[in-house]
Image 1 (cartoon, rainbow, N blue to C red):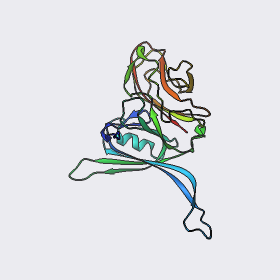
Image 2: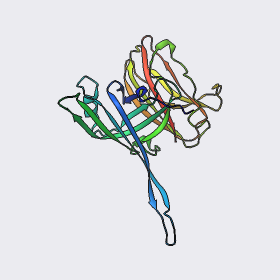
Image 3: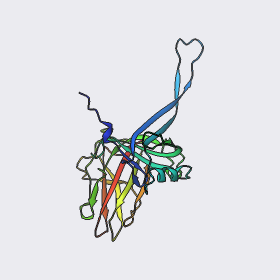
Image 4: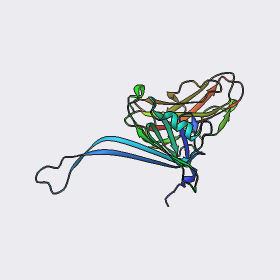
Length: 257
């Protein structure tokens, strides 16, 4: 029997913010251009695949609260820096799917109906014009969740569960890791978060695949890091801290190219 997923379990991360409480719709479209190469004498059309593309749309409730929809969606509209976005389907379980995106916000709309709640809609265009991220082929792609997005105490950080996904095999074209840290009360030192890979499920020969920039004490952040070359079959997130108190909440996702 198919395993279906209810949309109510979706989580939304936008840069260093978890925005799940504000949105009620997240739509993703990944496309590929085609060029017609039909020649004389053909009885049906022929095409070549062209450039990949991706778009994303978020809809939900308007609020002027600090770090909420109106403030953050206004802030990134027209920004020179693309936004980091994760849409986590059936969020909260390591190994579940996610859409990871590096996008420019191209439209922000507010609706104020006389007999209903004020709402927002934001449209995003995936972009590969990402500077140091150069090898990312397009800005919206499918990935996998490597953390649960729940708080972890400073003295409980370590290796999270390994994932045999999404290919159940190694790959050779690199990938991208995306980190969101919306809540961080760790004090006394920085926190280091990485993505590791291994050819064995027990991670007996685990190697660092991606190292995110160290997260400062009590800092919130978001970062996408691209890697090239071989990505072994099994991947996991791992975290450690030099801090002496507090906890940190982070979402890590990874997509193979």
